[in-house]
Length: 258
Image (cartoon, rainbow, N blue to C red; front, side, top):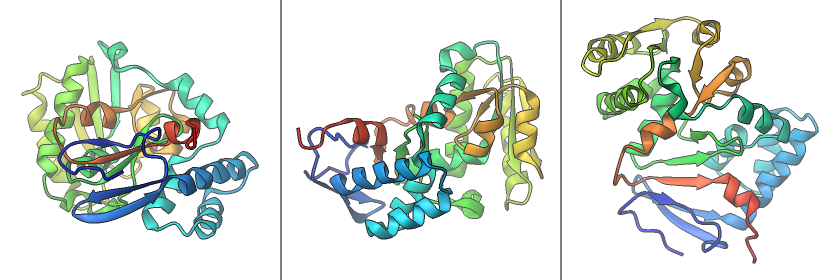
């Protein structure tokens, strides 16, 4: 199956069960779905038995000759059953956030939205949350379309009608202060009550709010009481943008040879 690059692509693991050829940011990329499924299942088996994520990534990556992106997928997007149950119990549907308070791990959300906007690969993880595997990290605020992506996130937050929102950004990331200022200026435009600021300890500050937290960062998710997948809600507003989303839940739960 050859997938067109003219619109959003969500790989169907029912009709595309041998190998998919993708075009991501102009780069041809081949995914052997049967091998990827086996790699994911092996990773789950190891995680269930307490192996560290770094070990699982390396062992599975070497066994299946995974490239950098798919190793990142194994590391960030594959989870044991216990974790999936925890996240399911914490997850809050967007429609239930009207009048509630939200704390946003902004750079985490932004990275995923930017990846989709720029034609990258995003992944629906086994815990149901959307994650990107671009590993932008410290260069994130130097990416093109940064203000456009920020505006889309703000539009999405406004549509949820929360009572108050705080956007937190890592202080040590270049240009985080400028983006915080941009967000603060735009809050009134979208009738959002809240603020944006930089912090040396974003993880702890997000958790201390006691609010619903918007992040896909597992250490923060583990400590938060309630979670929302703001990145996915924002990506749904992008329209006809060329990106690829691999759905690991479908990959694992579909009979690829049926």
